[in-house]
Length: 140
Image (cartoon, rainbow, N blue to C red; front, side, top):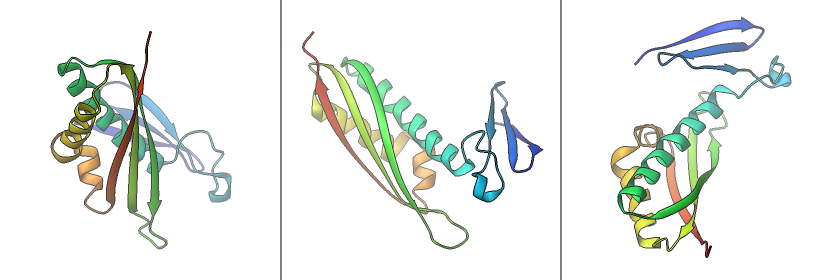
């Protein structure tokens, strides 16, 4: 896997992926940025959230769960001093669907956390990563 990050101006950088996608990253105005895009550390959280969500949806589909929506809210804390690594990351999954079995959601999240999600497992080397979930049953 390859990627390229190019300086644009001030503290803005264009990240380009091997698969042909691009994202602009920038800093807050207090750090000399213009707030034109997410911060690099925010990108790490988005990557972990995307990685684990991919796993959870894939596992739930294989379990024949009728999922209609899934999102994960991520709350993270960072160290006070440099390097300001993540020290705590909490992922709260919200799964919506019809006749969703909570025990299968719990199993899918555990499999992602312990075996499949390379992003959150890697972040877990410096941060305490926790998970919880809620299931919203739809009746229609």
